[in-house]
Image 1 (spheres, rainbow, N blue to C red):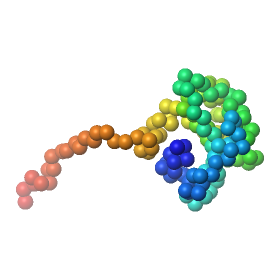
Image 2 (spheres, rainbow, N blue to C red):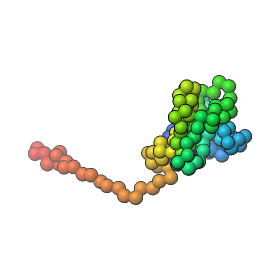
Image 3 (cartoon, rainbow, N blue to C red):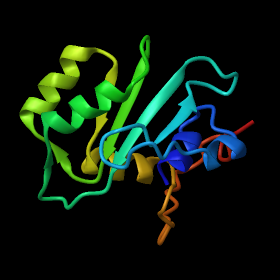
Image 4 (cartoon, one colour):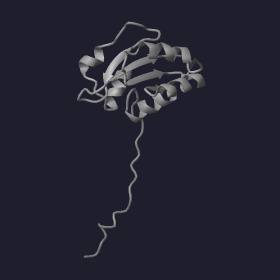
Length: 136
């Protein structure tokens, strides 16, 4: 789902890359790698965790992720369905190359990019077309 969302957001994820997942670690390593754009510049390393909304991802989880990133990594993306603790947010900000997406932001991105949602109702708002009534 995360790879599909990122593709919808315009990142360079091909069908082949969607099926590539690094299974080195399921508890703190790299879950996947995508490209920054469709031309293939810069890799973005991803860690995705599906946790209960009442759970906070703490600093140790981010440290594991950061430790698994290859040297010289420009971008890391840590996504969770839960939230991040204050110390985790502080840690990510101090690294300058890790972006955090919590459950609320993930849901908003899914809605914005039509991933996992469907339109239930649409409304059409009309206004008077003054050009139609113009005297000539």
